[in-house]
Length: 345
Image (cartoon, rainbow, N blue to C red; front, top):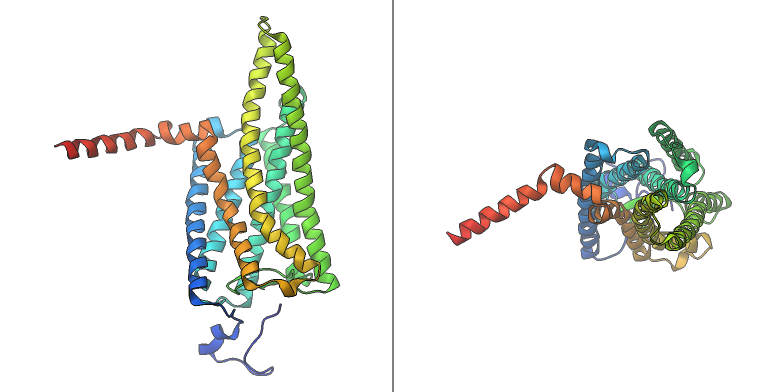
């Protein structure tokens, strides 16, 4: 898809008409407004929720472990995804067209690609970290320091940047999509260059990381199963070392389960969008409607809200930081008590 102008080839469009020089989708106004409202809700939830996760992990020393640095990075990428995508998408939906120009489209799509890819690779890193901690507990002791975790994340960001930059240099392109109120990489144009980029992008930032995650969790499940059998054989013997190792394994498994839930929700969120892109890649872009392009994009961007919700519900230390350490629970209880007292009197 390319940018189209109503002006002639050698003619500059009038300044007043510059925002109307971009393509529009022939859909009812309420569709734009509905999608705009949904993306605004997603943006607010993702921004506030991930900010609270970052705040909790940064303020509490007990949460600042090397493994949790990966979770902080995931929250940062989701926060950046929310704050760069939702306001722009919402504003364009209100105008029912893209109003930020060609460079704005490229920057918007680049941010979506960079933060989306970084999230996926970070999830893979979290899975690999859980794999080593659970399947090779002795070898992993002291292996992951904060410095090493930061270096790994630096590699994650550089890897994601390497896959986000090519459209700026002519390998594929960043173009409007769906209802033409948001932008992404060009997965519709049926040329060898565009198809090659799409194929490699899916392989190296979605399918391979997903395969690694599945591999890690298969062996995590096996390790947990074997440990359970070993503990049952020990029975009531006073083998404190084995019991201690089992308890540690249980704690690590709890963290692995939380990570697995986040990973599954992320993959589920991006699967419709991936399916649409693969349909276009296969040469059937003509069967895709604007709705089929836009709705999966909204679902994919909603992946940014899963991380804070899951950690708020399931992570005991995270809940402790907010509910007790910072007295949020006590303040809420005090407000409820005062409100009750006022009602009684």
